[in-house]
Image (spheres, rainbow, N blue to C red):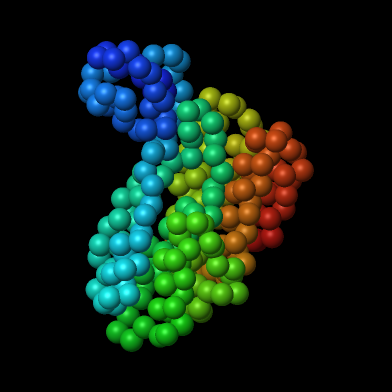
Length: 236
């Protein structure tokens, strides 16, 4: 949506950035009476933060299965608020976002398992510890039984990023990027149809191609766009 990023309080006259606070209430006096000022900008991100420290404490006291319902609810709420356009500026697909998506799927797998293995549980704990800082495990660290969870999580994350990028391109037309984005969409659909059942290096390729597309835009780098196309072609 397009919104006015600056707001002015009718009570105290102070101004603040809605893009930073995500709230129409004045951060200075608390008044709910404010008005948008300045130009409208495309904006899909929110000021939401992800603090999973209560869930880390819950897991240490109980089990992943017991902690899963509330943990998944918080992760879903966070993911629903994730956006990649901030005040008209395109942002990258970062590791914190990828870990959050993966944690949601991995927790679901472990919670539904009758006998989760030690490797599965330790991996979920690693994700839970690293999500706040974007500490994304390398493909070689993913247990085989959770490979599909990563594949589906990355496909979901890339698809959400693709949607925002497509919106951003409406305001900043680029036919070459648009064409490459269409190719990326086809591979994402295939990954989702397979429920993430794909080699780990292929799910990693989707992420790297997405990041190449971002680099090609912000740096006006044709080599990065060519790299994205080469990565996607390797998935044939």
